[in-house]
Image (cartoon, rainbow, N blue to C red):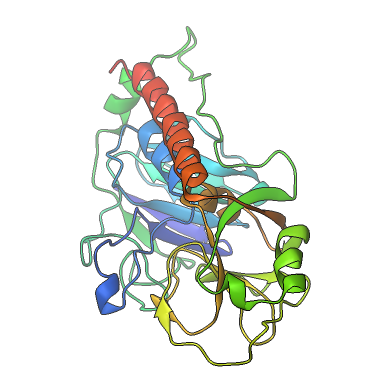
Length: 323
């Protein structure tokens, strides 16, 4: 069983929830930019949560299915022939064009049983800076053939609760897509927040920041007012994490994303709370964001609320599988 790539799209890679426990040797977890959408896509085809799916960015691929395949596309909304947020039985010989994103930036295409690629360091995620993992350590290109592991797609589809005409009318909620921009992202003050002058501190929270076209999976470059530090001294390199906001010498902040480096020497003005990172990941270049200060208690509440919403959606999907 396999899927053929007729057109790869802008950036389509295999991603799961990443490689954890290796930052001490310089390897970040990586994985899906929007792990919530990935979890929903896997649930919709009755996969385990750790399965890898295709992460589709801004412009989607065109795919040909060589056998009956149960698939689901979750996350950003794309203009194309592919249904969103519900399980679909793609018949042998069918072709699906995912199209261009009209809301959000990233979607996840999960297939029942997962893709037949070997894990590297415990994960099937593609780590583009290191050129390993996923499918040959790279983004998909025209002519690739992706092997699948599970031939029982039709059997899984038969387990679903369907309407009288045999179709699936229900769908999963799009938990990370914003209704409007700028989106509100909560942050904690970073280690070096106090070293920025009062104007820079005020501007960081007052400005509406734009996602620069130079952004990628390593980091989102933010366009807005330049942020100046009071002191011109050098700082020691220190650990960075998903959501760290660094400010290089030009004063333009960079929000570190899934493929971030594990240490950095730029001042760290803020740390984005984990609950808001998936929503930030759904911004395309030109999208806008506004930062709001919070404390550790509020960050924990936001994380708990995000997890509860996801668990509620997963329970609803399991019910539709009769589980």
